[in-house]
Amino acid sequence: MKKEKLLNKYHEEVGKEDFLIDAAPYFQGYLAFILPDEEEDVFFSSITTIGLSNLFNEKKYIPTEIILEIDETFSEETVEGFSKQLLEFYNKELSKKDGFKLNTIIPHSIDLIRSTPYFFVSQYLGLSTEWGFESDPTVQMLQLIPLTEGEAKELENIEDKTKSIIINETYKILRNPYRTSLPLVATTIKNLWSKISKWYSKNSETLKSRLMSGASEKEMEEFRNSYPVEIPKDYYYSLLQHNGKMSFYNGYEYLKANLAVDLWKEMKSNKEQGAFNKLPEYSGNKIKQTWWNQSWIPFAVDSGGNLFCIDLDPAEGGSRGQVILWERAEGPLESGAASFTEWLYLYLRGLYNGIYKLDDEGFLET
Image (cartoon, rainbow, N blue to C red; front, side):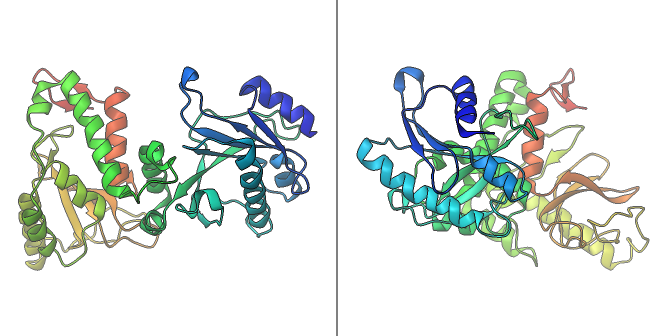
């Protein structure tokens, strides 16, 4: 689609830009700058490609436009230099085999935001944008999220779905390219629990009253030293926020740190004494074919002894840190969550989306 037609589509959907930079010779299109406007409750600048989708199509990628949102304003003096460096960055990345790949971390050397020298490639966190591309009416919108070196390193070995949750929960802070490095996992867990607590406060005094304060550093030190494997950061920070006791749903109780260790030791002892010699019914490729594995860390239990565990020794198709359901009658089963972060996020979504119902005593059931 010609760049003028794309620009008209942009004006119809987004509005008039403050600065429009011709993207030639990098691609036939523009960079559109919309600056902060307090009267419109817009507190950041957005820089959007218009026409980059044509170049993606030529390279046989999914037609894509890219947006960068940062807590910064621009003047006529600064917008030109920033645009040149940003376009050079786009050109360099598109010359590579895979172009811009979702959930990847890419270094950059743009002077104005050099304190956050990496970008995380995310799905656009705003509304989806349709550009009317002739061969495919929906053009995907990717977003670049500025990261410090420490943040990029923290995200490096995290599973993709969990990365997306972390970015979504910390995005408003990450828009500031001049911030100090943010502890991403700790901040995400804190945000998720804050939203859960808010729902409890509004809907169930029973659940709210059972939400305990966090474990002490000393308790967590003893907790970590009790296991032969390294405890995932997200579960560790979760216990620092709330040290168990409260109920999730269907009678599953979130275990205090010391009780989680006691239960793990009990399961380990049972296996050593030959209690779990049979093979489970599970036949997938994410969980190892054993009735119990000492690298499964229980964090919730119901009255029947069924568990939610963090799996730190997955099968080839799984991911380290995935959450599994362990049932006394069937053994291990998949939960659908690739990490404790995702499990907690799905629980939060279930609260706000009405998946769980409150019984007469104020506890949750499905």
